[in-house]
Image (cartoon, rainbow, N blue to C red; front, top):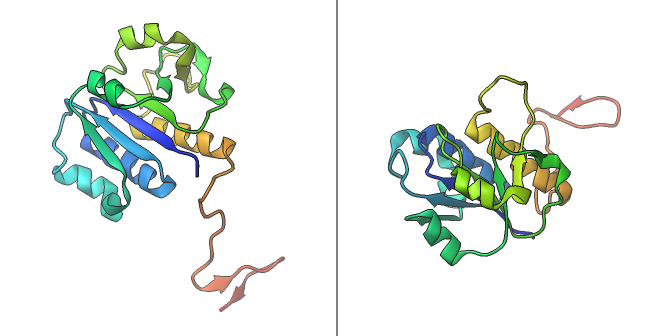
Length: 172
């Protein structure tokens, strides 16, 4: 299975990180958290947002962005409202790293400027500040997985009281 990595740089809101952790668990993506964070990993709000998915996570913590870059190598993509390129216009390779910044400030502009060709934007109405961080991470994650054909993910569900038929549902 191809490898997908979500990188949160200095996340501030535990509920957003918990929701992103749940997305990672549900999709098999790895989660990388860059400190300092605006909460502790024991935060009740963080755990609640991730529900019972914590045991399914592949999660790594780093004391700084420099420490992350020292330990990882791959194709990096930086999501920002400041970017000029649309996220869906990119073909994502195996071992892609999707970066997301602080809820209140985004990614450091120095990082964006050094990596202009890898900065990506999710389109939205003019005049609005941004989408919610966990929504942005989910949109980006599922675009990559769509391009990859949803490897190793369950693509069909089943009803609890009925079973699917060609033209109608019959009770179990």
